[in-house]
Image 1 (cartoon, rainbow, N blue to C red):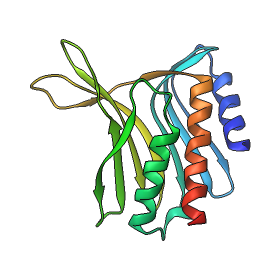
Image 2: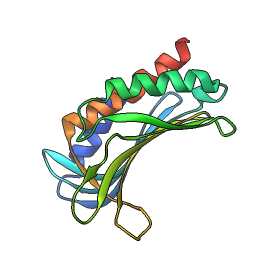
Image 3: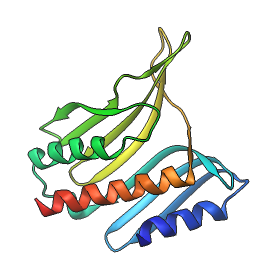
Length: 162
């Protein structure tokens, strides 16, 4: 709860500013966010990452279970999230929007990465036909960003309790 509150306080302090990095810590957990623009209601962000060494020795099976749990929790974004790939060698589980948002010119999707060592990260990508994907900012309300922080923390706690 303190990590989320500290993060939201930092986010509020940069209202009206652009291209800012926010970083807050609690114990061995550090939350960082790359903010494109911020207002009193929402922020346009390129990434939201919770880092912690607590996941350093976690088995891939625990990460897979936690990724499914995280997908079930994070049901308030534009598209539902599902695990799509597990890299057992690197101990990484990748989740994406399923299905992605599609229009005439591009496909947009969320990507969440859960990695041993360890971190949970959220990104938004855009893929235009014939081009490589590019990371884009996603606008989220402060409330949604706070929920994401809580859900990332709950996922780490869940992994540690298994």
